[in-house]
Image (cartoon, rainbow, N blue to C red; front, side):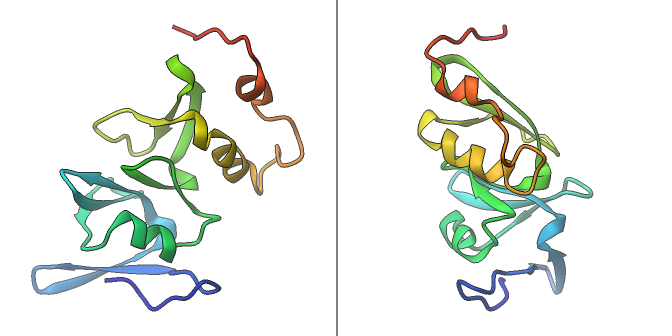
Length: 145
């Protein structure tokens, strides 16, 4: 269950029903949401426990603060605090390491890289600086494996 929201007032908590009880999560305590077999799950940042969410990633993307959450691909909507590091890999994709670590590797395609860069650098020491400009704009790139 999601709390009431409009564009200027994003959700600050999510309520999850477990059997006959309801558990409240602050959005800052959420690591990410992901799809597994067309079912949406939420992973909490503190214990790494996954919970079934009866919403779509699209609904969640629209309901949560875009400064905190970003849809990095079709399967993952991540909180900025769950991103540990990222690196360029084969075929112009970027691998993103999340905490707690999901079962599968998480990638961003080349189309989303610029938006991801803007999202991840807002509010950081790299806001006005050239964070990984060479990776994104260079015509020559060598993978590190």
